[in-house]
Image (cartoon, rainbow over all chains, first blue to last red):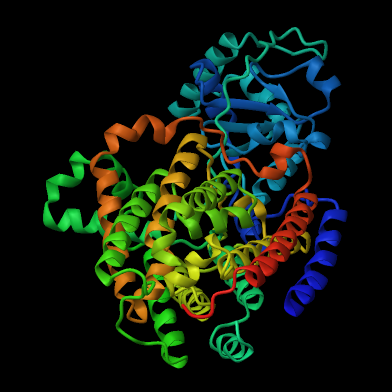
Amino acid sequence: MKSLKLLALIIIPLGIIIAAVPPDKTKHFRLTADELLQEAGAGVQFISPDVVADMLVQNDPSLQLIDVRTPEEFDAFSLPGSINVPLSNLLADEYTDLLNQDARMNVFYSNGSVYANQAWMITRQLGYENNYVLEGGLNYWFGNILAATEPAQTSPNEEFAKYDFRKSAAAALGGGGVVSATGDAPTVKAVKPPVTAKAKKKPAGGC
Amino acid sequence: MSNNQNTVRSRKYLNPYLGGVLLGLVLLAANFISGRGLGASGAIKSVVATTIEVVDKDAVSTMPFMSEYAESHSGSPMKSWLVFQMMGVIVGGFLSGALAGRLKLKVEHSPKITSKRRLIFALAGGILFGFGSQLGRGCTSGSALSGMAVLSLGGFVTMMGIFGTAFALAYFFRKNWI
Amino acid sequence: MGPLAPYEIISENTNFLLAFFIGIAFGWVLESSGFSSSRKLAGVFYGYDTVVLKVFFTAAVTAMLGLLFMSLFGWVDLDLIYVNPTYLTSAIVGGVVMGAGFIMGGFCPGTSFCGAAIGKIDAMVFIGGLFIGVYGFAFTYGWWEKMYFAKYLGEPKVSEKLGMSDGLFGLFLIVIALGMFYVAEWAEKKFPREEY
C-alpha cells in the first residue's frame, strides 16, 4: 500500500502536467544542415525547363507543377496544370499530403528560382522527397521555351533540334510571343490527381 | 497470510510497482531506440516460418500467411528485431532466476491437480494463445502492453479482450489454480 | 532525434544488437517481478495475487508518460513510433481466444519464455503449444482471412477517437490505473492465499 501511494504521488502530478501542456505540433527537421548543404550544392533539385516542357506536352501524369507565388500572381498567369501553394502557406496541413508523397514529381516554380528554391529547401529538410525546382523559373521559361529564338546558322545540330522542340512545345502549350500579365496563355485548371500519402519509414510492428 | 511469509515473498520478487516502472522504462527504451514496442509472438512466427521453409520449401508458398511474412522480411525471417529481443528475454530471465535461486526443473501446479493435467492445460492454452496472437496481430506484450503505451485503439481492445475473457472464464478453471 | 532506428542514427545491425539487450532487460524484469510463475500470473483472475495487473498497468502508464514527455521535449517524434493498426474484429476475437488461452495455460508468450528459462516444464509445454497454434493459424489462414482484415480502422489512437488530447487521456488512464490498483490491494487482503 505504501508503494502504491508513492507511485500515485509521482504519476498523478506528471499526468496533470502532461494533460495541461498543449500537444507538440511542431514539424521536425529530418535532414541535418550538412546533408542539405550537400544536396543544395550539387544542385540535384533543379530540373531543366526542356524536361518540364516535354512532360507537359506529353501530358505526363506524374508531373505536378506547383506555383509558390502569391495567389494574385497565380491568377494572372500560371503554367498549365499547375496548382498554387503560396510560399507563406507552404507548411499548412492541407498541403502535407501533396508535398510529402512518393507517387509524383512535384516541380516548384516562381518568377525566378529563389522562392521555388526556398520551398524546396524547407520541404527537403522535413524529409520530403520528389520535390524539384524549375531551373531559371518563369523568366527563363518565357525567354527560352515560349519565345525561343532561332539559333545562328553556324550553331551545331543539337541547337537546332532544341529549337525545333521548343517551338513545337511552345505551340502545343499555346504560348509563343510575349505572354502578357493578364494571362492569355490558356491556364488549364488542374484536376487534382488522387494523392497517395507517403508511407513513412516505420518499423514493422507486430508482436 | 502470515507476516513472515509476506516478507520472504517480497524479498524474493520485486515490488510490483517498481517492476512495472522498470518494465515501462524498458518499453520506453525500445520505443526510443527502435521506434517500436516489445513483443513475443512475432518471434514465434519467425521461427515457425523458418521451420516450415527448412522442412518443406514448397509449403511456404502454399501458405499465404507465411509467404507474405517471409517477403516482408528480406533475407531470413529469423533476422528480425523480435527474434533478437526474445533471445535476450531467455538470457535475462535465466540470469534473474539464477541470481534469485529460482532455477529448478519442475512442473508448477496447484496441489489439487496432477502434473499431467497441468501440462495438458498448458499445451491447450499455448495452442489457443498462439492462434489468438496471430489473429489479433500480437499478444499481451506486443499488442496490449506496447499498444497501450502508444495509446493505440487496437491495443486497448485486445487488452480488454484478453483480460475480460480470462476473468469471465476464471470460474470454470478455478480448480486448476486455487 | 529519436526514435533512433527509423531516423537511421543507428544501423540495422546495431538495432538488432540493442534488441538483444532490451530483451535481456525485459526478461530480467519479467522474471524478477514473478512473471515466470503461472500460479502467480493466474492469481490476478482470482484476486489472490494481482502482480500482473499492477506490473502491466504501471508499465503501460510509465511508458506512455515517458513517450509523451519525450515528445514534449522534442526528443522523440511520435509520428515515427509504430502504432498498432486496428482491425476491430480480429482484435476482439483474437483477444478473446488469447484470454481463454491465458486462463487455461497460465502464461502469455513473453512470460512463458521467462518461465522456460528458469526450468518450468509447464512453460516449455506452453511454448510448444504456441508453435502449434501459430502453425495452425497459418495452415488454416484461408478460413480466417476475411475476419483477419475486417473492420479496418487505420491506426487510430484512443485519444483521437475520444476527441481528447493525448495528455488528457493519459491523465485519465493514470486515474483508472490507480483505481484498479486500489481495488487490487483490497482484493489481495480479502482473498489471501498462504501458499502457492
